Image (cartoon, rainbow, N blue to C red; front, side, top):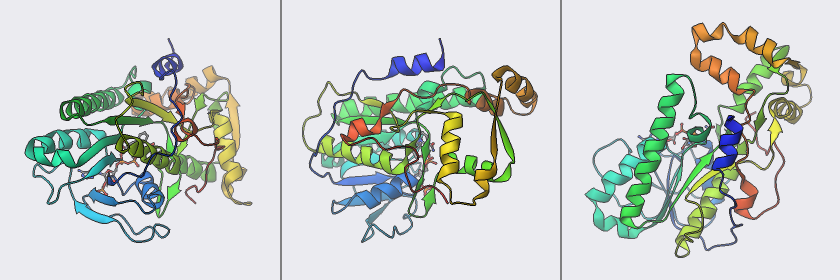
Length: 324
Ligand SMILES: NC(=O)c1ccc[n+]([C@@H]2O[C@H](COP(=O)([O-])OP(=O)(O)OC[C@H]3O[C@@H](n4cnc5c(N)ncnc54)[C@H](OP(=O)(O)O)[C@@H]3O)[C@@H](O)[C@H]2O)c1
């Protein structure tokens, strides 16, 4: 069984298109991420509170800054004010889940001000579960334990829950940008040629603005009435385009400004066995790095395309803006 088979088997059969629910009040965790910045920009006139260790940088296109609630998810004390509305988290789920569990015991009355929970996990919980290196196996264990804890907490508190498991988040929002494709872009700018195992495996990158829009849409759905028990709680999520690794890099090159050094890098598809043979010495230095190289050839796609959640037209990769 390949990773692609596992991924496809884990997909919900279908996710109903979600249409124009009413706007939820939101308490946002992880605002200092590109997705958090994008969500603040999309929040429009709704009631939005940002909870975190530090206020997010001012977003130029978001109008007035949202209210700030100081809240360190690792702090054992409850926050100075009660969070309200839908809790929406782009913070690491292994910090958010124990915090919510703790807080529901510390402030049971505060739970009544909540309308639901939308939390970000990662598609790694699916795609890295057969990893050979310990780092990735530990990551999967932490993600899964946190997802289970969040699910049991929300069930006990009768809070509707959606867990988003996105793949490969990219793009820029406000002053914050991704550290995935932007690093590949840096590599393209530095190298004259980049060897690849054939065309590489399939990818389904999702822009931080698309992820934020999906999270906001689900928050609105949870706040607008009883959650439909037929809708999946766990939503593996990707962008609207599925493309080979090589094709993704070509589109990235084409999206740079004319004359950008990234355009000069030649992609060099090698026979996959030769590519792997050449990469083998990496096992001695970094087993995790070697497995990352192996994954270039794996199909990490087949997730629900985000346009299906939003009920909108699909957007081609790359969605702009990218990290400059
Ligand atoms: N990057 C990807 O490609 C990718 C792929 C799949 C899933 N995800 C998931 O998508 C979400 C966003 O990912 P990301 O890589 O942009 O961000 P990240 O590094 O996973 O999370 C950073 C955010 O979490 C906040 N945070 C961390 N610890 C906290 C604490 N103790 N108390 C309060 N806030 C805390 C940070 O706030 P501070 O400003 O206080 O540091 C920051 O806003 C995460 O849930 C991540 O697991 C990411």
